[in-house]
Picture 1 (cartoon, rainbow, N blue to C red):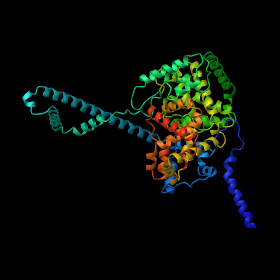
Picture 2 (cartoon, rainbow, N blue to C red; picture 1 turned 180 degrees about the vertical axis):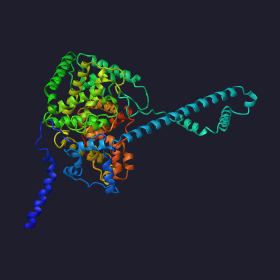
Picture 3 (cartoon, rainbow, N blue to C red; picture 1 turned 30 degrees about the horizontal axis):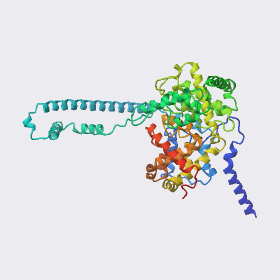
Length: 559
């Protein structure tokens, strides 16, 4: 009898510990912070985790695979550190501040400068060899011209060129290695690299001009469609599916998102009314950001700003919370490190959070502001936006960009808000649907992930939470969103098929990885840095094919 009571007590205790996470935040206040798994950017920071790595290495000599989770509660307990609402952020900030030794920083900087100097010197040498080679080739051509017909009659033209080339190689044997390498590089098809901090405008990785004849024709069609007194939104969606030209993207996004009416005469009055309404919210609510009920939300949005600046880590070890996610927003693009831009993002995110108490602010929502902000900045400037100083724009223009970004982001989130409510049921459903879809379209990938105990939730949570923004360059996200806004339920339903196509796109690389750690590193750091419009167009075409093969026929790929 006593054994039975003890057993029941233990069972109740275990059940209580499993449900502890759900009870932890039972008393929610409007706009409270919701921590999510996989939303940190970058996923792993060696600087912040240096001490943790050392401790881990001392205690474990080999990587240990986590126990396979069969329920969401078990998965939560395995990854409890990612769900904690404690002071982990402050501890990491303090740890990072301690580890930032100025001597180490200076030594690293000197090495970077030294390497850069060596590369510059090497480039100069290559240019020098190139110049010498051109001069010698010119000299050879001159000699070839004065050769008499009788001397050349016994050789074909090709043979004569070859013999001159052989003589040239024998004469310049010393520099042949470097020149041969250079010639091989020059003979390969040229594919220009798009740097990480790259153009956010439309760009193809093949290096083809942005405004081709076809693009010019499409731009004319957009302008004709938008010029009418009442824009045909259905035709606009069809035209936008394959991408929207930069010149008309701002007005097209506003129409497709439902922010602006189709009637041209009503647009200006709608813009004025919505912009005034937004700044009315600012006057009404923004001063309350440091109140007890809202300070956690503001702190979460705020703390990522000092994380981008090592000096600020030391100066502000305890920062308020709306700053947490701002510098995680495209941290390598200078535009988003400008104080005026960060203040705009803080206001947008804070106002959205307190106006949507069912979800509050969730890490990752900050990402969803950036495409709108960049597109609406393009409306007022001609040059590239990456290094553009937005403070040079008139105050009225900045206010318009801020209000338009807020309302369009709100329209987007209205369609996927269950992704961010308590326990994030929308994301859980989508991840489960992705697993089911992949198991049917590519069983080899699905079984390979199962074999090495990789859960879809461990990598696909971020894909759903951030709409692939952490996996793709911003220019690709903007192109992707052209189609999402043209597609019915693009950000919710169609996004599932894009994620499936995206996973299958890396089939070869996934199947080559033979352990849990290798698979997780690959899936959290997929090499899309140099992607452009071409790769996104292929991805969308494959997603479209999957949608129409599977969406209305769930047994189509049934095993």
